[in-house]
Length: 403
Image (cartoon, rainbow, N blue to C red; front, side, top):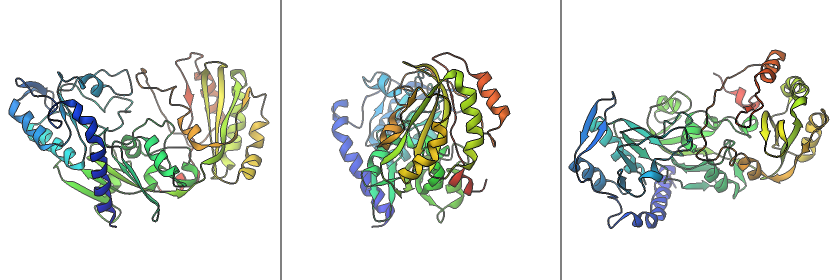
């Protein structure tokens, strides 16, 4: 079957599966609430504008998903996003169930000049998944993932979470690079590049993106790939933001045994310098199969510690040999490296960064894990349960792709 036809079929199945949930919204599911009067909104430049009852009704009648206004019982739940630091109140939320719904919402926003936010998983750290007094194009109910096992392709709707992607692909003995928190949205994660525990062997998530369906600002639904609209395909693989709302991602999958040699090593914080100085010399010679990442954190039971993630995507016996020097450093409090389901690693951070926490992050890219960097990390760490320093390791297949 042609992949785009397959995508359309699976999206339709996703829409059908979602409909029973929406019947609770009211007698007419797709028009979740009726505006009793015109509502206030803001334009792209911050000017106040008026959205009339007829405008809102027209959008509601065009969509299969509901249009949610502030008086609807689902409004409060629908405006919440992952980072509790952001408390935004949009004028309306267009809950999309298909690419066509996304196109209708985008056309409405463009025609009326309304400030617009695109919500996938709602995991945007700076809160760009939501806006005040604008329209939110909400893809969060478009979560279907279909796996083409013959061609090893994972077709993933734009609102899916990384956990949805992992669950669907691992069930078939396949995987691709996904991130380190399972309730992260596929959309923002992928268009941002996509670091993960498998990137040293398979590359970044964008390196595994074969094609995508995207709704651009003109309301057109386009399919982009290396052959079709290659400039736009380049743009959504790290080129920046605001190129459109991606409603479907087609990922290259790889044969993968989910029972994998992996886990955590944990040392007391006073051994941080020893661990990091060893790591600085050791990590440059690691195989592509081995992903490691040091973190300085406060553990709820062990207190202030330095921890090291280990995931070996290959022969466990070889993994044992390669990890042995790391295990010999200092006196670990915990050695949790063992054969276990990959999903254990993929979900272990979920509770730590649960929905509703107030979270701020700063990031930097470094080319060398130098002695100066070790000094900076040790000096910068604050022994506070609210603070942590994490490192994601690249190299391997990530470095195969030119800048």
